[in-house]
Image 1: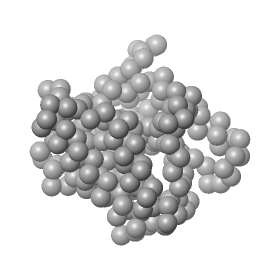
Image 2: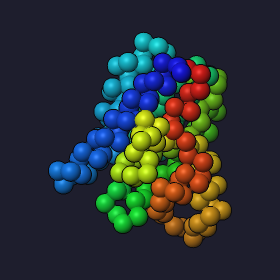
Image 3: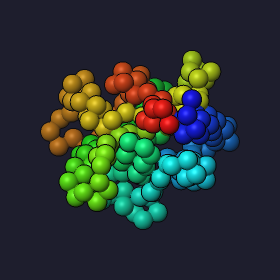
Length: 192
């Protein structure tokens, strides 16, 4: 397994554990806090092996771009929007802002057309933070953070949920994201 994948496995486990630990004290750690810590810890290790990270959170660019961060390594370039599983609900779920998804997809096209970063082109993606699904706890290093291309998620939502015109958001259960083909985020960087 590659060095980047090893780092991402460790952070996937950390994400699972911190989400679970926070609920034990009556808290629910926010998605932006998980993202900030994940990116900081990943960057501390991965910059030495060729993974570049640029956070959009601190610069307040998420509203404009639809992305929480950008990362690049080898032939892979991603614009990423993160979502945290709401584990307090009876059926754990994610809240997906459909306008934000459209912004993410549009910004990806704009960025690629600008040529600012050259090739290969960026791909829009979602990363889902997960925890407290007992049947998956043994595999937390793979399922604590799962990724999917935004276009695939958009297609799944359109085909399986048929959002109404002008609908602003939609909730998806963990199993729906898995059915949409979300996989461990280590698969975003195969062979690295």
